[in-house]
Image (cartoon, rainbow, N blue to C red; front, side, top):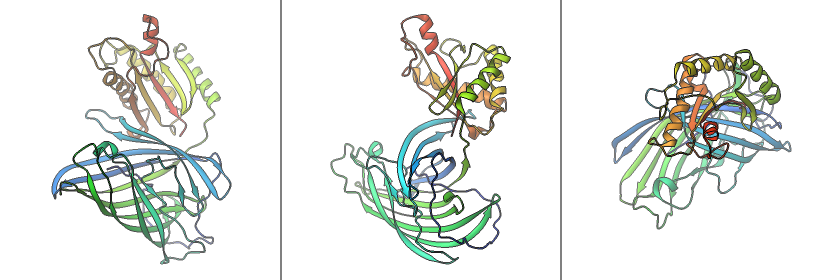
Length: 398
């Protein structure tokens, strides 16, 4: 089971006065921000421990348009796994999102969208609030069990949420409004004729959250959550997921891609790497290492390539607020190695080398492999196969 919500990591608390105006979401076209989050989860079956896991994720959003009362949010969500012996995070799943939110926090999400899982939480009443005030609202959780259990539809669980306004606090130097929310889950799934023989009949559970809202900017800067989800299966077994989650918000400055491309090109030329290609990409500015060399069927960087990565790292250090995405690609040729695995390993090698050079913190570099699925040119000559056999390093805009 996968959850993500928005939460702020905090320091000490300081009691302040409540906001003068009602709490509401505000939108300004072009605003960009991202959340870093973690969720710890324990899974049991019939009360017997099965596994513990740590899930890391990143959520980037931009306000694509607004009429003042409703904002259209376009986002990209990545879930990460930490593989043994690697410092950089591997992307395990990715989702694009595109939905609308009104000033009171009510979502309008296309029916086919699986993210976000938790919707319409928090919502705000009209009128001013003072510490201790309470209200209720209608929320929803949406769970995608199609891959896990072979069912053919999303599970939508409506919830009635109870809110308490805790009042203003100072966290990490910001004055934020703390709101507590609680709700229970109870939903008979209604699944019929699934492909697999093991599937849930009933979902129950609870969520206890504390939200931290920036009243001045009109957005949630984070949350903390404790939750439990219990699935009663058609076999009579009971599977329980319990855990805690938290995250924090980082504002993202708009990237001047043409100017940054020229800056990076000059930095490469000054270091004798003028043949390395740099271009604007949908998610930022990409450095294409199509001439990086690995031994055959290997992901080990030879000394000359380590030096190349070190020099590129010197340039990347100039932009410390930009996260880095490393993507590996192979040529489509008959090989003893699996192309997907090899591309992931080579991307990881470059990402870990950048971390070893102190270019970023571990949570700022992620990687993934594409195998031979995204060739730049046809794989019909040795020269073209060399171009397709590449690693791409992207400075992310958000």
